Length: 385
Image 1: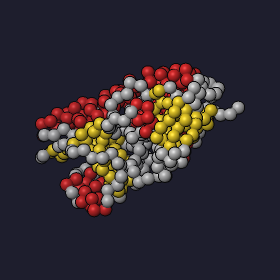
Image 2: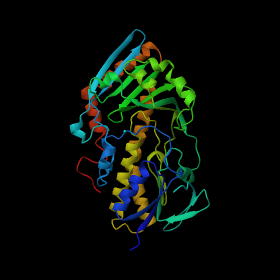
Image 3: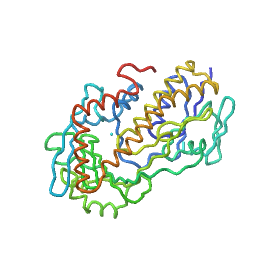
Image 4: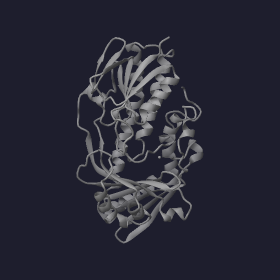
């Protein structure tokens, strides 16, 4: 029997994982990516237990990933005039969640839907045909534009400057694989160990709009930033700035919420469907949750992996939306709110923010949040695919 061909738009995080899981279920996935190959865009990627569970469904995949050390604890600091102090420490409950918190160039431009297939058209004029199309082509998704028309991404009012640096001595001397927050007046800095020797960090602040390019600073801008005011941050923050191997700056965007992610035989997942600002560290993990449920529903409604009817795909995609839209919509809103809380201005507002942080992240409250937040997309050992 000829395998059912599935066209996947996007070769970032979601596309290859989706392709591997579809292949394992009898489909014939083909990935189309807009770029020539790996680029210098972006920094590090945070995989949390919900995302790692999905990756764990692919035999031996986690063994191929260079494991970063388990994060020992999250340390939060306050920097206000006349006050530089540790706010709190939280250890991660690894025993409950299986894992610690670990980090063809043809852009699709149009498609035409048929009774049992979709013809996709590419920027170079070539075409291809598959049974159905899954758009996981990110914030700037051409698949989304083709489905629902062009719309402006929504600037959150915040920018981030991020980099990769050697782990500071303050943590290295204690033998820690750190994660930390620094809360200052109008500024927030987060850092998480990327491996045994390096740490990824990001500084968030409210300022004029910046493009969402995720490309590295040129040498002159990088030198200026390394010598600027952030180079004097305490608690290892300044050391990270001064020793950064690479620095990028980018605006933070999300998009208006979609009421539906599909039309007929084409569906969106990941950032193409629900782009989010990064303040919860859930962007890639939510894309992986989408993948799990999409594959699960395809197995449920089309167990033979034969060419599905449009009615079958309608059932799959509608059930996916009913399950996923409420969850992702809530997380997008929470991420934006968290970003706003982190960068409040004025000493009194910052003191209230700090007290809120202490209340939100006591060990008991943090454990409860983790229990609710990271039980998806399935309980350990209970996968349905």
